[in-house]
Image (cartoon, rainbow, N blue to C red):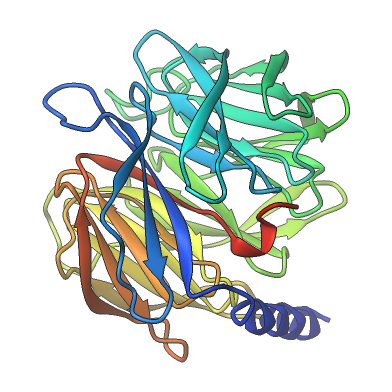
Length: 380
């Protein structure tokens, strides 16, 4: 059954890869504070034949719109405004012809330092992780894309062993199960992936039973991703620079750790912090980012066991890869170089998963997040 599901996912991916136009709109979240010259959210376009990115243009002025997410219908975009105090989430309407963003409204994120945003698969709610206060919120979406009053909230508690980074909870990402029934919040400060049942209609999240999955003390779980067939999930651990693979049971929403692998090469003794994790649309490969070693690590995924086998580290023209993303066709990987002030493009080898420099990049001040506007969802 596992292999059959994997083959089905691979077939769907192959069909999807032919369903796109020649170019794909790309939205870029950035940091605007400090010495950054960024003014907010930028847009570009990816040529799906060559991998070339168009010159970025400002789509909307905003303060520290670090992480973005696009509504499943392709008509709206949501962005957190990351700051030390009480944060906020903004809603924008997407002009699907020109690509510009029209500000709709803004709501409080429910905590300090919002750092990650998601939209449930039904498009009913925005979900936010607040790093500074270690909390998560749910905000209902109105029919016109605007944000209603927050409807759900959870506050984490606890600490772990890192003397500076784990004195309290720090929710770092929030993700949805494939069936839209559960929300998973990776909390760097307490070394747990908190598991919540999601009521889409009411916009609420409550503790699941079991309420969490744990990683090694001091690991610092950051970002989370499901495999293509939904039977496995992966978390990248920022502090100890590892990736943990989990088996996933969908009915009870249970994660069971099955493997932890290093994200760094043998012998590396410099400073490093992991950031993003992504599964290739085919389900065959997993990618993670290293800030310090300045690389993207590539693994092959065993389709039956969900375990990871190292493939390579790609370092060409990479500098502090805060975020990266793989286009929906699976052809290209775009890497946001936060300290390199650029987005670089790599072509993905469909057989091995290896990254090959595509010799294309654009200049963007302090890029933090990359999101694609899927052409198959526009104007639905």
